[in-house]
Image (cartoon, rainbow, N blue to C red; front, top):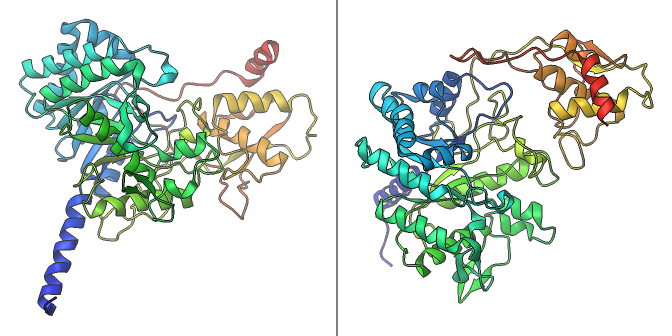
Length: 484
């Protein structure tokens, strides 16, 4: 090998730096809005811009959100919720109206850089029991036709974000990849339509879910550190689950004649609470590992090159369903109030760190807790806690969670405070019959990560939405006790 001069080394370093920035700068992020107290759209858009996100994926087409994204240059994937699939799939007129209102208006009047329409969200999940099997493709087809009619088809592409459970392996390795037998025909119909429409296949990949679902799953295989024993597939070695999963899809597409169909990773991330494996250290390790893994632009064995991906997610959502698990409300790289959870270098900021939201307005510093004088066996305690957790958020309580080490008083107080804060600290939201009180002394433990939150000021959108007065607790608890 010949001598390498200092100038050569500088040039090589610049090229490597450029490749890293080029391949990472386009990282996208999911912006979900299932929160009791969402931050205002302008605060959220500033959060996106401050952290260098060039692309954002939405789950609906909220007018204020889209308008605020106008003139930012941020590429937007706008979403059609599953409960609208039957409407736009059953009527071409409805599809055209949806495109006119949620795409054309924002492109032409608000200068929003809409690039994709996500038709549904994981509509073929096995837990949906086939509810959307017959209506997803008609919706996809009608929206594409409406985009063509409106003249957007060159700029705006359709796609269907799908869970990785739509494909499987016949031999346990990526090379055995094919679409699930029960949906094989409809998948080929959709894939063929995406191909002729020059549109991408969007897939959500979650190594965490595999770890959560299978106690025997090798933990190290979920991460990108190279510590896992590699899995050999005909001589091709896979050192992490992400590469193996994505290549299982790539093989499925190749096997069915669509080897060159573009793939977008619509969701990938790691939660920080709600399960023993959901914590800030694992989340930092996974997300930073993923960023490093894709920074060189080398891709996977089947799909070399830059990976098009959206992190899941931007911010915590305390109103998400916890049917899949308590972790569902804790996927954000930022907390509910836009504060960075852990160090994460996206390669998009000068500081190499996340930049928290600015100008966040909070409610008064006060909390609702259990009265110290109340006995734990007081008959009002149990129904009060059940009521509070049922309508607020107690997913930080339990084994392995951030507040899992609280004593009984702490657990009860956490539940009361969660309900109190969610209801904007109204006095009647801390009137659990003779067992609760309002305090200005922070009940959060001084050691550990458990925090008794103070809620942010409610945001009143253009529709005047927000913060309805809660029913009187005494009345609701009486009804609650009658149905137990």
